[in-house]
View 1 (cartoon, chains in turn green, red):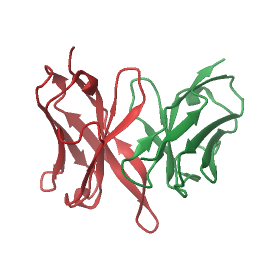
View 2 (cartoon, rainbow over the protein chains, first blue to last red; view 1 turned 135 degrees about the vertical axis):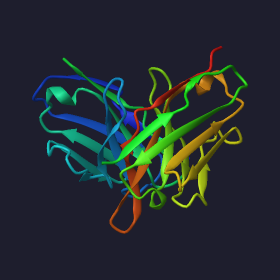
View 3 (spheres, chains in turn yellow, cyan; view 1 turned 90 degrees about the vertical axis):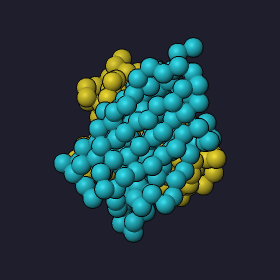
View 4 (cartoon, each protein chain N blue to C red; view 1 turned 120 degrees about the horizontal axis):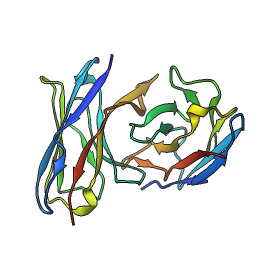
Length: 107
Length: 123
């Protein structure tokens, strides 16, 4: 099974900050990685697919990148509505797996 | 507008059974794979099961294999998850989610999710 390790698990940031979340895969998954945002009590929202392609309607301050088995989600200028938990997911093979999540809180 | 609406959750004793449903609308149901994803209270997301658009292919997490069965009725635009031999660790909100395919038809993620249905298996 492909394991995804997200870091950090928690981060505290201010509005306007640049935020970076990392997701490391235990083996090669090419670009078969998606990112989701989840707010308390809500279903996850699909943000990015193919490691770096923004889903329609997602603000351009979100971006994704990949280097080998390391994937990064960056929020260029954190907004109030971005405080949430973020998850990566590999869709290369079954069983599908998610990272443990990164909770972004207000400093 | 794509909509997914789960139902069937509730309180069930250990060892019991429950069937979840997910009613879909707003897309050509039979052409999309669908997944169940769960989230235990205060925990992260856990993929549970996937079924192909035709229903011919199914996949399960090891944690539910042999106890849960995913199925779909394409004539009713409905996805199901039959859960049996339930354990306390199955307590979670269960979401159904639609597969997204980008150019070339590659599965790329889960683009629409239902609101979730809570399954509680008390200790």
